[in-house]
Amino acid sequence: MSTLQNCKLLSIPKIEDPRGNLSVIENNVVPFEIKRVYYLYDVPSGAERGGHSHIEQQEFLIALSGSFDVILNDGQKENVVTLNKPFQGLLITNGIWRELKNFSSGAVCLVIASDVFSEEDYIREFQEFQESKS
Image (cartoon, rainbow, N blue to C red; front, side):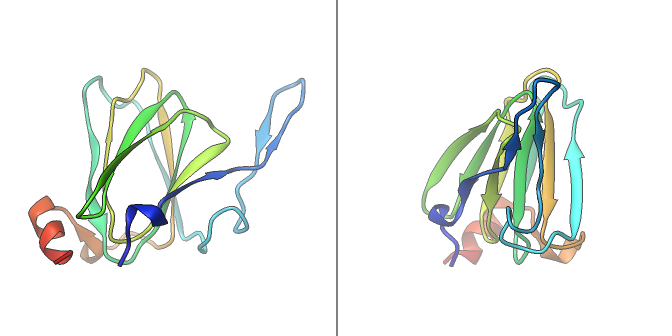
């Protein structure tokens, strides 16, 4: 059973250069094979994203620009992680409820996923998520 302890901030290699920094994400950074990449941007002030859990899929979230909060819940505990560094990402294992809030102006959230989109893998109602944990 996944717990908040399974969700971790992971460093992304950063190559510093006076012309601008470069970070590289390969399969040695995330502990799963990358199957899908997408990003959230132009999130209106006060809007929230997420609000679901995955049955199998794992995700790795990065604030490429700006900042936002990720509220994690494992059915027992809740934790808030602020992402605001493009060389650090948050690993979210399966079975963890997540909500994304407090997007700064111009924030971009990159999501690297362990699987392609499948609606059957989502739990979109918090009560159903809680029931799945008991």
